[in-house]
Amino acid sequence: MSPQSTILIVDDEKHTRDGLRRLLENEYDVYVAGDIAGAMNVLEREQIDVLLTDLRLGTEDGMQLIDRALKMPRPPICIMMTAYGSVDVAVEAMKRGAYDFVTKPLNLDKVELLIARAVQGRKLEQENRALRQQVDERYGLENIWGDSAALHEVLDTIRQVAPSSANVLIEGESGTGKELAAHAIHNLSRRNKAKFVAVHCAALSPQLLESELFGHERGAFTGAHERRIGRFEQANGGTIFLDEVAEIDPSTQVKLLRVMSEQRAFERVGGNQTLRADVRVIAATNKNLETLVREGKFRDDLFFRLNVVRITMPPLRDRKEDIPLLIRGFLRHFCKENNKPLVDLTSDAMDALLSYDWPGNVRELRTAIEHGVVMATGPKITLRDLPMAVRQAAGMALPGASSALKTMEEKSSPLDLHETEKKLIMQALGATNGNVTAAAKKLGISRRTLHRKINEMNAAKVPAEGTGDASDTKQSSSSTENTR
Image (tube, rainbow, N blue to C red; front, side, top):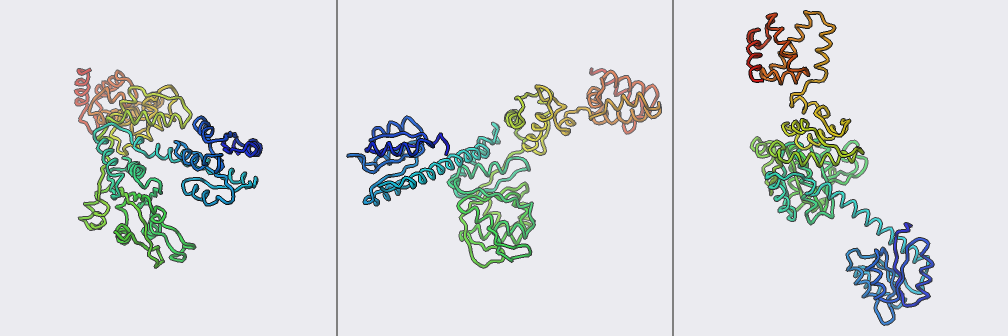
């Protein structure tokens, strides 16, 4: 057993205290006391895992000590020692929160085994508490980062709806955090000690989805070699999260409607036994269910069951003021995960992240920051460390553009050089609406070099493909030159 586990032995007979101390001190940190006052002094001073107390402490009652110990902020596991004739009192102690009891004269092997089980139970309790804290940190409101008005509205709705039993429909584009919102609702609800069960409806065929939701009996279909417990049974007392609920086929919608009715009834696939499950349903979709209802693709009665409270997750482009906060959070996370010192971003990298439209929303931003942390070789993430889509949107040169021009100058024939150069330059000018400075940046060459090449093209009267003739290019060059 862990030497950090602590035991307090309370008995008014010194020889009993000393005998138990000798029995246990090789495996535990053992404290002793002869009365309630001494025991409370130890309990208030030390973190005790197991309290082993006699029922009769002289003129005092060990039951009172157990009552006081169980009211402490971190109560110990309480075991009572009692004479055989006082077993009824010991049972009463267990009803009031004691872990177990042993009768005197003591069977020392039984005492050791009982304490070992109690200590192991305390360890599991601590591990579960730590795991629940990790889940809360990951899925609580504190992990939905942002300070925008749009996000505050969402968080206020989550706080309001969570303690209720109402079903919730969460709408929003992919990557906006719908599942995080669902977890937060569950964790803030009265069902948070039961399971949160997620089902991604779009990933399963209709037959597999029905089996996944409601379970199946052995032999219900080919490959059903044993009974399967469905997600509704698993989530009994808790919450089920139906992601991409719009993808559920009509026949399964009917069965889902039934389990969401007041009867909460369903049958496993291939079975005829009616089962019931007390489950809160949170559904999410990136489609407009009202439109699907009008088109006859989604049942209106099921929609009304799901849509008791609706939450719309805002896209990242509508809350860009939250981007710096999200970036800082993702930086801390991925630097720690990749064992890198906390890095920063260069100003051009930050500008690129702020100006990008983020079609993939927060999920895409998270991936971009992870990419930047992994690719960064210096103390700061630069524009070149960010994903290609962000770099291209910022007007950064395509990889190899400048080297391609250099290679052409060194190895190509004059005819090939002019033709290929012309195509690259015209593409860059077209992409930047004739802005020479932006086109030079996109090509990865200096502004002066690009002006020189445009002048050479004008002098040679090379037609400018798709943008007019050489005189148009010259005019564009002159116009841009005037705005230097």
